[in-house]
Image (cartoon, rainbow, N blue to C red):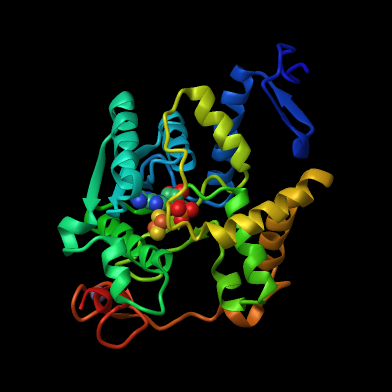
Length: 301
Ligand code: AMP
Ligand code: FES
Ligand code: ZN
């Protein structure tokens, strides 16, 4: 198969776009897609400092690489969760460090054990009723927001791709979880002075494309999924959507992008657009809907 742009041998065929590209054209095409998304959704500008949440996986490292290539002020934040099985957190951190060193990019690490006295598996063992992933998500959201705010960043970027977003959408739509559906957006504006804007610049790219991009750029990333992977359910929905995609190329992307369009045009969930009242946590000062302590502070109490 030949590259549609230059006629050289193609390295990837993207059936949903009817587009085959060679290595060089693909490595140009991916950042172009990301730039279009950043502009279309008014995510951020070159004058802003962007904090990239990097897990050591392909998506977030590739995102960081792309933002640097596009000339944005992008710095990384890695949260060491203390997940020891097979050295998962240590190995992920090494991947982040190696990437940052190779690009001369600034990054910081927050170690949950050092900061809060317990690892994620330890604290979640004490908390029945919340899964390890649920606890982990709560801690990550808190730390990301806190570091972004204190570091003077205005934007926080994560590496969610089409596959991630479509799987979450599928999961929420099956339960008509309208509250979650209303908040599933490429950009979440800062709804409180202590919150930063959250953006997902990879929402037009498939997981497979991100893997190809990371591989072709020589980005060394962690292949393993987290051993506590919420995986089980999300991976199952991803698999179902991939089966659909197989027989109907583009179905995955269209499912998600047409949802965004319908919602933004007010054809879905109009009643959910209401604002929630946010107070401040008495201990850490971060915004919360709970009276007294936020869920994060209650976790360690
Ligand atoms: P996940 O929830 O693991 O699918 O990850 C979604 C996004 O959250 C990733 O693309 C990263 O941007 C971010 N992320 C996940 N884990 C970490 C971590 N340990 N430290 C910083 N950011 C993370
Ligand atoms: Fe948080 Fe697996 S990454 S529990
Ligand atoms: Zn708090």
